[in-house]
Image (cartoon, rainbow, N blue to C red; front, side):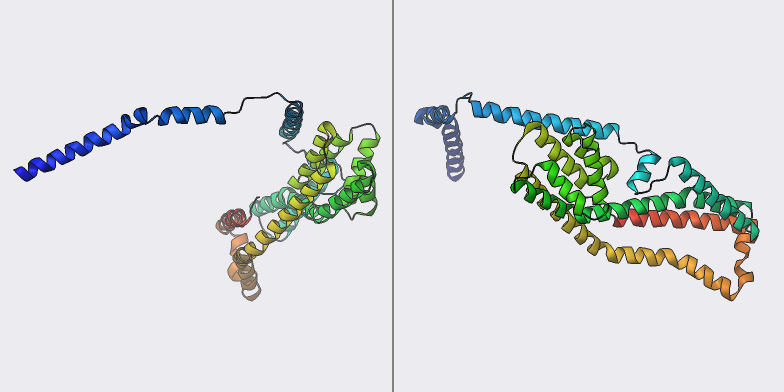
Amino acid sequence: MNMQTLAFAFLGATAVGGLAWVFLYPLLSGERKAEARRASVARSEPVARQTDKAQRSRREQVEGSMKEVEARRQKEKKVSLGIRLTQAGLDWTPKKFMIISGILGMACAAIALFFGGGMIAALGLAFAAGFGLPRWILGYLKKRREKNFLKALPDAVDVIVRGIKAGLPLFESIKVVAADAPEPLKSEFIAIIETQAIGMPLGEACSRLFERMPVPEANFFGIVIAIQQKSGGNLSEALGNLSKVLRDRKKMAEKIQAMSMEAKASAGIIGSLPPIVMLLVYLSTPDYISLLWTHPTGQLMLAGCVVWMSCGIFVMKKMINFDF
C-alpha cells in the first residue's frame, strides 16, 4: 500500500507540475511579452513607394493581358473546317473538301458492291472512306506541319533575340526570320507581317499565330509579344527565356517519344495481326474465309470485329500518347 500511495503521489505531482509548466510558466517568465515585442519589432509597416506602384501597375497589366488572351482562346475553342484546312497547310475550300470526300466514299462503296461485298459492307466502307479517311489525312498533315514548325521555332526566336540585341526593331527581326526560315515557319511569319501591314497591332498579329498553328509554343510566343507591346519590358530577355523553354519542351517531347516507342511498336503489331492473317488465309483458301463478306452472318461478324479492333486501337493510342 505504501508503494501504491507513493506512486500515485508521484504521478499526481508530475501531472500538476506539467500543467503548471504549460499554463503558468509563460505568464511568470515573461516569454509572451518578449514574443509580442519581437513580433512588433519584426513587423514591417507598409510604405507606399513609387517603385512598388510601378511594379503593381505592370503586374496588373500582365494579368489583364493574360485574361484577354485566355478569353479569346475560349471563344475560339470550336474550330471550323476551313480553319482546320488552313492548319493543315491546304488551300482548299470546305466545299471542295466535302466534294472530294463524297466522291471517295462513293467510289469505295462501288468497289465493295462490284466485288460482291453486300450493302452493309459497302455502307461501312463508304462511311470509313468518305468521312474517316479524309479527316485522318487532314489530322496527319496538320500534325506533320506542326512538327516542322516546332523544329524551327527555337532557332527563329534566337534570331529575333540577336536582332533585338543588335539594335533592330522587333518588326525588322521578324522580317529576317520570314526571309530565311524554312516552311511552314516562313509562311506563318509572312502572315504576321501581312497582318501587321494592314493596320493590326504587332502584338495582336503575333497572338493570331495560335489560330493557324494551334500548339502551346505558338501561344507562348504570341503572349510574350502581346504583353511586351502593352506593358513594356526587356523583350530580348523575355524571348531568350522563351527560347530556353521551347528547347526544354522539345527535349521532353523527344524523351517521351523514345520511351513510348516500344509500346507503339507493340500496338502496331497487335493491330496489324488480324488483317495480315485474314489476307494470308484468303490467299491460301479463299473459299474458307469468303463467307465473312458473302454471308449475312459473316458480314455482321466482320463489322463487329472492325468495331472492336478500332476500339482497341484507340484505347492503346490514348495509353501511349502523353500531353505535357
